[in-house]
Length: 422
Image 1 (cartoon, rainbow, N blue to C red):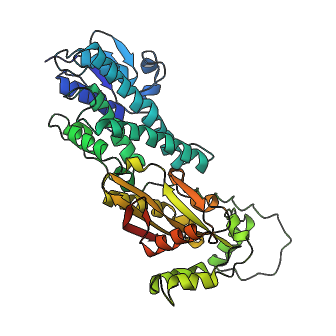
Image 2 (image 1 turned 30 degrees about the vertical axis):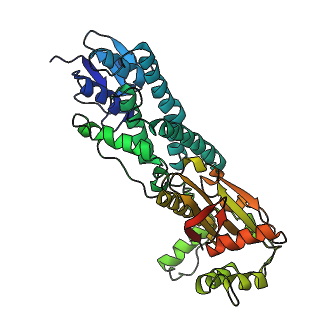
């Protein structure tokens, strides 16, 4: 079979994987460049004369037909295999395929790329609120495709189309960059679909294995480089002096240009509290929660309502929860991402209800009178609502105690599993 043309791409490029998968599934022979160095060859005049933005993937047909932009190339190659069903069986199905390809590109992959740039320090300055905004948009797109797959095997019709191949590639990219295990637990249908596509015999070598991230990467600020020590001005000769040890010279160099001080957490500027949170965590771990001499009794005796506040926490999207063990894993992932606030926070959060009819709720004890400065270290904090609790209100006090004792019940849904952040 003669080749239809050359696809300019690199093996690790996810949109390129989608196009190669369309060609392989449709039985269309294509060539890959024999030698191509990205960021070099695509900047050369001969490449730019064909593809003015220097972007890949790019298509060069045997007939001289030139095309760029991933979805356009994939659709064109699919037309070269009219009996493959890759573009659907009707104009309506073709439109739906275009719709889902557009959704995964604009609602998911664009935000995946921005998140990658922010965390890698390539988009500067880093901003956690922006990170959270793009993460929320990315997850909104993923939850949309997850819901669509909840009642079907493939995106359009009853067989694999271009939409499935394209979505699998860009979801695989998201899984490689920031979609961690707890988040994947909320995407069981999308993960099932991805595994189905990448394990097709004709496609396995193109996609490779599905990556697994235990926790999403976080931004780490680069250390500021020290300026070189200025050469000393000439001085009058002095009596020979014993040279300093090397370690002392290095210490002097360090002091010439002080390191940029670490940003101070405003919570550290609050007046000293009479409640020692570490003592409370030990009391909670070593005592029965309820009863005389229990952890709650200890807490009420030592609680400082000026220095600390109590909060109810609820996951905003219970309709997205499926298996209770997955929801429990989600809590664990949320707690992992709260690590930077460990010294300011205690939490007891659980899953209530049963599979496909559950919710996540619990209580927090945190430093200060505002929850946001404590919880916003977690990129997904905005997926939860935080409501201040007042112990003077009997119902709110009962909620707080039940959350800590793991016997909380809400709207007939009983506590089935929980986790503590301590």
